[in-house]
Length: 340
Image (cartoon, rainbow, N blue to C red; front, side, top):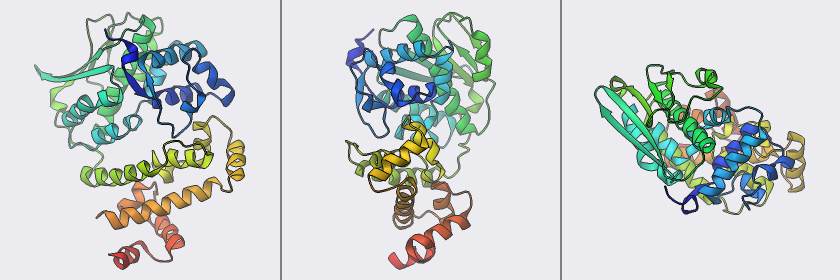
C-alpha cells in the first residue's frame, strides 16, 4: 500500500459528502475536524486538492456525524458521472458501454489517483475491478468499495438509459449488519467477503449504444462550457463568483436558487442577502450566464437552436427563443446569421 499523503484529490468529493449529510454552515468544521483544512474547500468553486489522508479523515468524520451505518451507499448514490467533472462527460459521450467504461478506466486516476480500475472482457463477461492503492481501515475501505459499485452502476445505467440488473457485484468486505439495504441501492446481486472488488456485466452489453444520443455534438457543447469555466478566477472569494462557478459546472437553466443555496449550506434568504450586499441577485447572475452561453453555442458550434435550448436546461424551445429575444432583441437564428 502507498502513503495516503502521496495522493492529491479534488475537494469536490468532500462537498458531495457535506451535501449528502445535509450540513449547514455551522456544521462544516466538524466534517473537516483533524484535517487542518479550511471550510472554504466546501464552497462551490474551490479548486483545492487535498491529500488521501485528509480524504479518509473526512469519510471517518462523515460516518460519525450520521446515525445511518449505510453512509457509503448514500454517498455512492450521489456519485453520478457528472460528479467526476470532464471525465464523467467523456464517459457519457462515448459511443457505447465498453468505450465508456474504458474511458473511466483510463482517466479516473486523474480525478481519484488512489484508485485503479481495470476493465476486462472475458468468458462472456465484462469485469470491472477496483484496486485501492492506499492504506485504509476496514470502515474506510467498506465505504470506498460501496461507492465503487454505485459509480459503475450509475455510469452503466446512464449509458444504457435503463436499470441493469443482470450483473454480479463482488465486494471484499464482510457482510455488514445493514446488508439488506444493499438492494435499495444496487440493482444486481451482491456477494460479500470476496477476494476482489468486481462489478461484472454480461458481455452482450459491451456494444450497448449510448442512450444520450448525438455524443459528438454533446461533447462539443460541453467543451464550450469548460472553456467558460476556465475563465472563472481560481480564488472565488465572492458569493456571486461561487454561484457562477456552480452554475457553470451544471446545466445552468436546470439549477434552482434553492439548490444553489443548499450547495452553499445556507438558506435561500441568506444567499439572497449575501448577493444583495454584492449588488446582484441570483436571477441576474443566471440570466447573464445563460445569455453568454447561448451566444457562444450559436456562434462557436453547429448545434441546432433546439439542441442549444436543451443543453441550457430549457424543456421548451419556445421558452428559450423568448428568453433569447429578451437578451439580444432578435431570434437565435437571426443572431447566428447576423454574426456569421
